[in-house]
Amino acid sequence: MTTANKITILRILLIPFFVVEIIYYVRTGNPVCWLAALLSFAVAAILDGVDGYVARRYHQWSELGTVLDPLADKLLLVSAVVLLSFDNEPYLRRIPLWLTGVIISRDLMLAIGAVVVRLVVGKITVRPHLTGKLATVFQMLTVSWILLHWNFHYGLLEIWMLGAGIFTAVSALFYIWDGMQQLGAHPASLPVQNKTSAEKDKIF
Image (cartoon, rainbow, N blue to C red):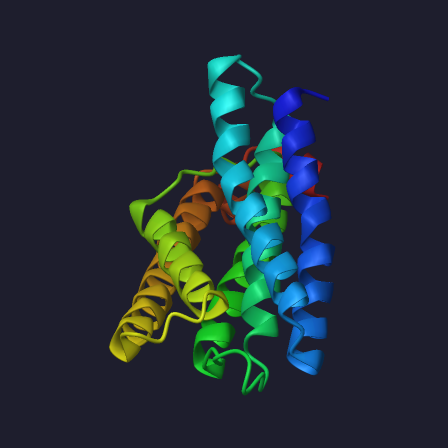
């Protein structure tokens, strides 16, 4: 359990606190709940960079970290997106359901695909794509804009939402393609008649 992994676990523990405070805020309008939710989201987001820096600076890379770090990111953003998809007026703006559907659908497809590749190939190689990073940035901008009540330029929020939807969908296509390439390179994807006797014995 490295320091970087401990920081990542702290990020995950902040998520339930963020969810509860958002729910209390939209029900009561208590500004203390809003401030607590905003701070917990901000701290979790900042610690995302901190644990990455610690892992690189002190050579604390681990297989556990490669699982926990993206999991913490997904849990934080998906929790925020789902909460903000409900009618939270007059306290918070609403994320359109089409964007919520795109984000959740991509994450579900990638999770299922990762399990399939892991079961068939035995391991999975995740190659980060620029579109995936941009999708995360636009999702973070959308959530932050709403939480901060930044309504001074109405059109900007719609731009962040559109960017989040486009880059999320495009990144899904890239990751699906990568998964298909890894499956296609494995002997399990070959027709049975093209396999050697040893490979057929493993199947049957």
